[in-house]
Every structure is written in structure tokens, then in C-alpha cells.
Length: 291
Image 1 (cartoon, rainbow, N blue to C red):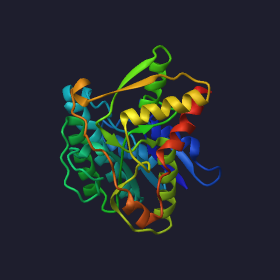
Image 2: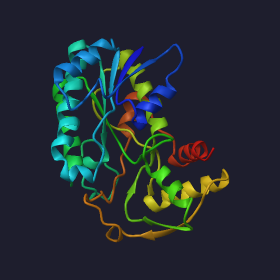
Image 3: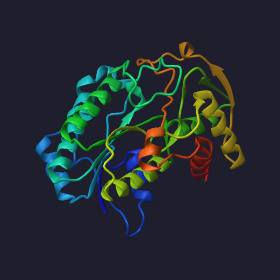
């Protein structure tokens, strides 16, 4: 099975390239400079058609959450028009498309984990662009699958795990927000799930629409940091003491959802897929980074 993946250097795209099974899936990574999501829709369609995919995974996105507040046009170009162009190209080719979205489509006010049918209410430009991107994808491809995920980390790119290990290398204490709760999610686990979804839709599973795809279990950022440091210390890497702070003590241009927890039951019901608990996945990534 040939899978075209948008985003050559992203965490999920890199994880997909690493996790693809020999002889079963062939991953074709599409990225800049020759593939530009902010570019012409015709060029996007031509690049995807040239990959001759059986499935398209739309993983590339504008993800600079705070910078998006001053770059709304750029975020919209990639996350809305670009995402819609990818889905339209897949529909024209008659192949499934799996599109990655985010917990930022919610405002975080709910006290329980979010289900797919809950009202959305993004609080910033990034979240609004990703929500509009979901709508563009579903409009362009009636059979599209949109996968919302959260708190993504991996051995690749920029993410919270790598930031914590870098900070622990030169200080004894790290101040971390403790009143935001979500599902830490390994991009390696996301990749495994997307490969499983690709096989399922190619095999005839007709489920479509929006699904939540996140690590099992929940944590605050401070909980997550403590788990990272414990795993790092066990692997002979840097560690630090976590001082728990409130969101008000760490202001950012974009308000983060206080509750980013995603209920992933629909994914398990429809596809039999549930991601592992976040703690072992965190330890796996930390050990790789420390090594």
C-alpha cells in the first residue's frame, strides 16, 4: 500500500516513515520546497497524483500556536485552504484521506473528556484555523476521516519532552503549569494508529467523520514533566525538580484549553484502535532521546 503523507519533517510524518512495515506500506513524504500547502491548489493536486497513493495522510500543518496570532493569513493558507486542497485531490483520485486535527478546536471549559459531537469553541487563531480546516476537509471529501489529537511528543522535531530534557540539563528546578489537563500522545503511537486506519479503510471499513486519537490516561503538564524527568533519570539522563504553577503564572499570547482531554471511545468502537497509556510511551521516547 502506497501512502502519501504531507509534511516531510513533522513529528507524525517522520514517525510514519520510521514505523511503516517493510513490504506492506510504502510511505511517500511530500514537503517543501516542491510541495507547499500554502501554494496553488493545482500544484498540490499534481504532487499528490504523482505519488500514486492508495491512501493520503494529511499531517502537515501550521502549528506555531502563539505566532499564529500575528500570522493569521499564513495559518489559514496552510490549515484551511491547503488542507482542503489535499482532501480534494484525494477525492479526485478516489482514495481515502486521513486528516490530523487538534484539541485546540475546543475552549477547554468542559469538565469531562471531550467527545466528537461536543460543541467546538476555539480561543485563538490556530484553533480556529484547524476547525475551519476540518470543515474544509469534510466538505471536499465525503469519506474523509479527521483525527483530533493532543499534546504530541516524539524523538523528532520540537516538543514538550525535548524542551523539558533541555531545561533539566542546566537547571535543578523547572516551573511547569499544573492546572491544564490533557492526553500526552506519542507521535510513534499516532503513526501506528494511522497505519492501522489506512489498512482498515483500504480493506473496506466505511466509517468516516471525526474521531479522537490521543494517548490513554490523563496528566497535567506538571505531571507530564515529572514523568519525563523520572524516565530520564532512570536512563542516566538529566532530571530536575518540578515546581507547580498556575496558567496565570505563565501567560502566553494564545489561551490554552484548561481541559484538553479527548474521549477516544469512537475510534475503538469503529476500528478497534486505542492508543497505549501515555506513561510507557513517554518512557520509550525519553530513553531514545537520552541515548
